[in-house]
Amino acid sequence: MSRTATGISLCMIVRNEASSLARCLKSVNKAVDQIIVVDTGSADDTVQIARQFGAQVLQIPWEGDFAKARNAGIELARRPWILFMDADEELDANDIAELHLCAKHMEFEGFFLQVQNHISDHIHSATITVNPLLRMFRRRPEHRFRGRIHEQIAASITEHRPAAKLHITNIKIHHYGYSSSIVAAKDKIRRNMELLQQALQTEPEDPFHHYNMAVEYMRMNEHDSALHHIRQAKQSAATDISYYHLLFKYEARCLFALGHAEEAVSVCSYGLIHYPDYTDLHHLKGVVYLSSGQLIEAERAFLKAVGFGPAPVHYHTETGAGTYLSTLGLGQMYEDAGDDAQAIRWYAETIKHEPGMRLPLNKIIMLMKTNLQEHLIPSLVNDHFKINTPEKMNVMIKLLMANRCYHAAYMLLKNSQIKSASPENEQWLLICKQLSEGTQLQQPGTFTESGALNPMKQIEYNYYSGNTEHALKSVEALLAPLHASPAAPLADPKRSFSRLLTAFTETRLLQVLNNQPHRSVIRRAIRMLPMYEEYE
Image 1 (cartoon, rainbow, N blue to C red):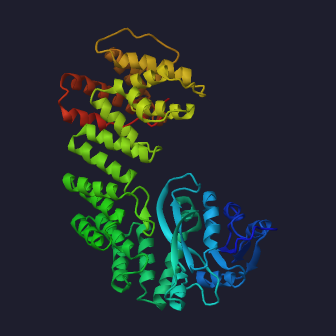
Image 2: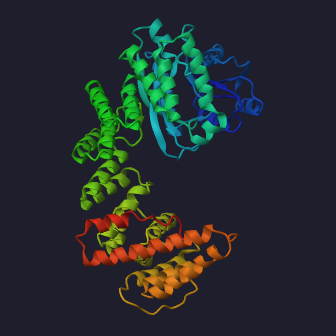
Image 3: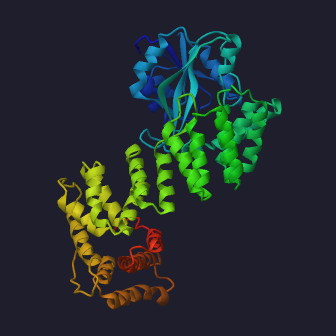
């Protein structure tokens, strides 16, 4: 297979990666001009897929040593640069040109790429963390990987060339290997723990082994053990090591998880002396303060994080620190302080940073509803959120209905210029209209049967319309089978009763709030009621 000359050899090690390898190789096929795949014993179609992409395949037995397998592959490399990736990764298509540009700069010995760890196994899923990792380096005989697990190349480069220039890029590699489904399927934690224990037996003082052991314990929520290894790593690691800043964050996270909030804040503060622009530590301080009810301190920490924005590219960072997670923290802080206007402001900022987030939008809806401003929600939605497709409109309507904001949903649908592609749209419009009229009645009214409402919604509408006695008798009839027959299906009646009870409670609380709008305790009580997770 002919390739554009880029001067880059891709080197991989794989085993039973048929489900993900094609995606990886497709993403780099135009970025490199040599592909070397070291297979350590696949029993599926991994080897055949690799060869379909023109890869040179080397099959060797697995000896429990990642560095050894990596080095076997780079022995076959023939281009000036070596890029290494795993099968559960994907090179960002928008960054291929920048990768080619890097390969022209022979004054560097290596390049750090931004490895984005996703929550799921597709590129549009949320990114949990971003780690700058040395992933492309000059091909030289002395440049070889070290480490049975979490193998590294940097030590070899800097040992032989202390003055080596390494450059941090914005090139993105999307990594899916730590999504929960993949970790479970491959039993990665157990495998990693076994290899790290073997490595620690050989090198008991190695800080990188302790650091990686701590990471595995944190994944298992065993924070006591993780804390032990973090502190072991801090004692022996050089302060200029690339992951040293992470030790402060992980130590603080473990202390916080163990209930030691003051110690967690102290660790963050000490870390910020050394890394004052490390946004994650400012954000983490805000989280700890907020959980402890120290709202003034939480505000100060979150504002610091927002002021710094996303951490500089040389830091390992949590996605959202300094942007949507920090603004969300400010929104929660102001909500807890009773400043609803500021809370709405910061929740809106959160949505600007991360338009797909549902939580801050829910928060805004409930804050406006409990301030008796449901009628203003449609204008807020139109002014601040881009509802420019039928799909987005459907999501918004479902969200309003889940929060029982039927009047807002009806007005948004009624006045929208978007013609929804959903066949449910006309039915939703009628349902919202009827429930909107019902919720706005404060005195008994006449209930008109409608085929648009299922029996559950008819009971709810009956209640909203003022026919309380009729509605409650219907609920009793709904519950009767639970007592009459133990074999009766429980799930639907229980859920229906729960939904009705929530609606009835909310209606009564809103009536009280209408008469006593200053009662913040009533507003808080309404916000504690559960959403309808789906509309039936």
